[in-house]
Image (cartoon, rainbow, N blue to C red):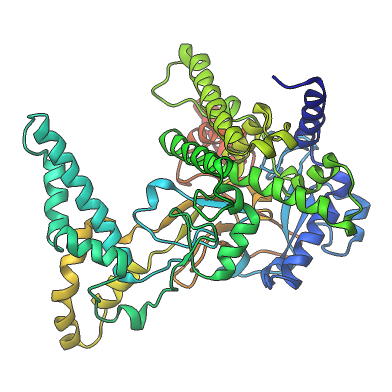
Length: 528
C-alpha cells in the first residue's frame, strides 16, 4: 500500500505520462530529432522526411523544413488529432503524418531508421544469433546452422524420450521426421560443437559471409550478446544495466542477487505469456535511466523528479497509446459473451508481469511509482499493439546456401555440395528463417495507412541490421504524405480490409476504398 505522499507522487507522474502529446512543441521535437540523426548519427535519409500535422500551423510552415502539401483530391489518410495512425473516418482533424521533403522515383530508399526500442522474439532466438542492440548477425555461418539444428534435434529427442517414458507410441510422424532430418547432419556432439565454437568449418563461409565476433554483455549475462563493444556499451547505458541477469551487473550482495533472480522470473513469465512485456520493460528501463541522467546533468537546470521524468518520456509521449487490454483484438475462438472474461485475463497477465518487474527494480519503482502503475504499464504495452513494425533481418544462412547453389564453377560446386547439402536437407524449411522481432520507430510510426500506399517496408541482403527501410512504391512529389499499408494482405476486398483495420479504430476512406465503394454503389443502382 502506497503512503499518501507516494500516492500523490504516483498520481502526478501518471498525469504526466498519460497526457496527450503537446502539439505546440511537436514540430521542434521532430526537427531536433531529424537534425540530431543527421549530424550526430549519420542517418542521411532523415533529411528526406518531415513530421507535420495535416493542417499545418503557420509556425510549422515557417520552419522551412517543408512547404505545405497540396490539398488531396480525395479525403486520404485522415486521422484524429491525438493519433499517429490513420483515422480515415473523415472530418477536419487529420492528425500528423510523415511527409517527403524531396521527389522520389519508384525503388528509391525514402527512409532508413534505427529503432527507438526493439527486441528479437523469444521463439526466434534459437534460429538467429544476433546482436541484442543492432540485431546484426554475429558469430559464423557454422554457429548459426549448428544452433538451429542442435535445438531442433534436442527438442525432437526430448519429445521422443517423454513419449517412451509415458509408454506411448514410440514416435509421432512429425517428431520422427524432425529427428531424422536433424540426424542427417550429424549427432548432437557435432552440432553442439558447431553451435558453440563454429567447428567444423564449411567451405566459403568465412570468405563470402564473414560475421562479427560475438561480444559478451557488460553485465556477464548469458541472454544477450553483441556485435561490438560499442553496441554492448550502448545497450548497457540504455536499458541492459537494469535488464541484465548476469553476475557482473552490480555488487553481488543479497539485494543484487535478488534483483537478478526476480528479473529472471520476470523474463520467464513473459516468455510463457507474452514476450512484448520484455519490450515494455526496456521502455521503463530507458525512461528511468534517462530521467536519472537528466537529474544529474547540471546543464539541464532540472531539479524536480517529475520534470526529469517528462524529459525522459518525451520520445514515447509522441507515440499513440491505448490501454492494451481495451484495444487488443478478440481472437476468433473467443465468443462474444466471453469478451469481458478474456479482457480480464489480459489485465491479470499484465498485473502479474508488472508485479514481478516492481520486485526486480524496487528502487526504480519507489522513485517512479507512476511509471510502474498498471494504467501506464497497460498504455506502454498498448503502444506496441498500435505502432510496432515487424523487425526483420535477412539470414546469411539462406544467402550462403543460395551462393553455393549459384556457383558458376560447376566443378567447385560439385566438390562443395557433399559438405553443405546434408545441412541444407536437415534445416529443411528452416534454412531461410530470418531474425524476427518487433520494434518501434520514432519517425516511421508517424506513417498513416493507405490501401494503395506510396511506400512499403522493404529490405534486401545489404540491410544487415534492425533498421526500418521504407522504399517508394510509386513516384512521390516533394510535400506529399508518405503512407504505408497496415495490412499483411493488400489483395483483400474492401469489406475484409475494413474488418482488419477495425483493430486500429478507424474506417479507411483512402482513394482506393472510395473508388471501390463507388463501384459497388454503381452496380447496386444498375440492379435496381
